[in-house]
Length: 146
Image (cartoon, rainbow, N blue to C red):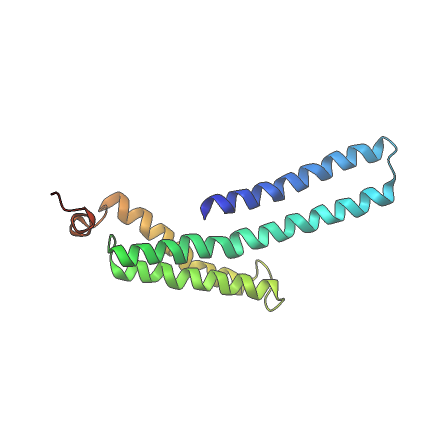
């Protein structure tokens, strides 16, 4: 899921770079009204990719899927994995609320909803750096030799 996030960001960045090109063409005598319409469309594309990427895909990939896999495999403590599941759900819910106009993008409610995701990713990174995966879970996941 992290790859899809970067692809969405790339689409947003490319749309802004296209606007720069359109602006250069506008100074070369291209029709201003049509370039304005295309530019506004590309800005809207950028806004939607930013909203959909960090506001939705991160919660799905980093929160729900990774949290579920860590919970099922018991490679990290269960409480930490549950934090990932809760955090992913909150990010997705806040992203949907922004899309539907219920809350402001980048506002205090969306920031508060993102805090558990931040804590989940931070704790997972620190845990794996300091402690590593649960050795008994790794042994249980290994296929038995014949």
